[in-house]
Image (cartoon, rainbow, N blue to C red; front, side, top):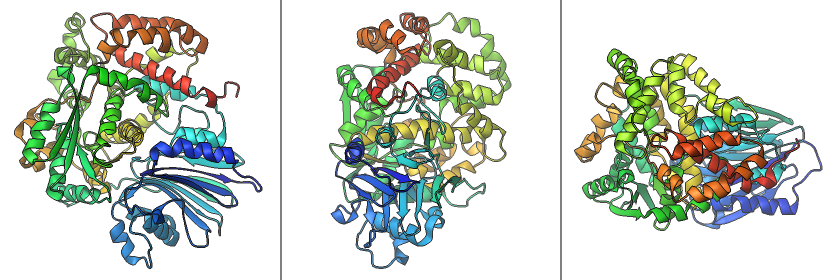
Length: 614
């Protein structure tokens, strides 16, 4: 796990300035605090910041070069089956996966990619034939941004090191529109014009000064006869391999509990980690994590924090955001990673299971929307819901909020309905808020998922949008701020391919979600873990915005002066949202306000990188 960057000049006699090199490496350092370096070929300069996980010796430092220094690799991620792959490679000088990947790609080029089991973004440059390849893993676990023009192509793990290489860029109002709809940015576009994401399963080829971007991976539409117990057990086992201490996140939900229980089978001294709210019983679920830890006999660490502990981390958290991202549970992951890093350098997580096996509340809602009684009965009580407080801050209030959204969405077509459940704000709300309109790119992604033949469109949309651009971004950015590597056994490509080809009744039925996980792993855990209601990793935002954060919201983040000077938002709409916080029926106003706070904090931090006169 590391940070990478690079730049390739399409024209001769160009190079990277010394101060730019230092700034780029400095911007990558938090992703790889153990070692930072670069190497300049004639046309290509590669940058790397290392978080040492396998083969801790300097021999595995990067950029990794051949003896003649004609070829170079920078690599972020892990190849979990590297020991199998190295069997056909001769005279390796290191014991990790970096040299294996270097030699394999040098020998087989892109044909080797489908043999890699892991998560990664990497760049391989061959100065002999003047070819550059930049590759992102199948499902987007590791990030990769790029920029290209008639003179160069540049790439990096995060925006800031890339911007050091390419200079200031204008804001992208299409991406801002998407951000305000979802509370994160999805698709190929980013918050900067001309800067893009390399999508999961894509690669960039530069040959003969021509840049080509293409897919190298698509999920095959074929059933597998493998046992999910066997494959998931192996996926966990190979992800426990490291030359540093390894642990497991344990929230007490089904997914992380299964992963932790399997990890215990392979690692007798496994450490597990959970975070909770000492002051907020409704948001605290550490009792379930402790129940699982006791059941599997792990070495459990509970970080049960006061509200002040969370609030004291808000400014460092906001300052760490590389691209506007307002999934508020990112703060929990930020703090959990911070404390976990004090004990281990690698942590397993249950990410991916909800998207693959239909574990979210919206999946239950979609399932019920096709049942006559729910489709007709729930909307009939809409006038009653309007009389009752709806919010995310209590079990009853959250249920009312959910019923309201269900009653509104059940009347829509499947694609529009699922979009409404995925979004925090409607398009009309965003149009009213923004002074300059934009077009949300994720609309076309939803349309593609719901119009294609093959996989269930809900699962397909979740993988491409929610997983790639919300859950995995949250895990990567927040953990890497603290030099912690997160590994996701459910995203082993064998599990994903199996899950995507399962019939729907093995994922969800009239009684349960994640049916196949319940049926195959219930013997590992206490029954309570499978019978408790689903709950997200949430924060008491409404309370904080009304009290502890209210002053800074009004005098700094969302002050009238700041909003009007920016010229991006209509202040009267911002004020309406702030007023809604003070009512007994805030709806999604706390999440919408949080998105504005995150964006304005990000805007302050990135002023030097924004070109206001493109």
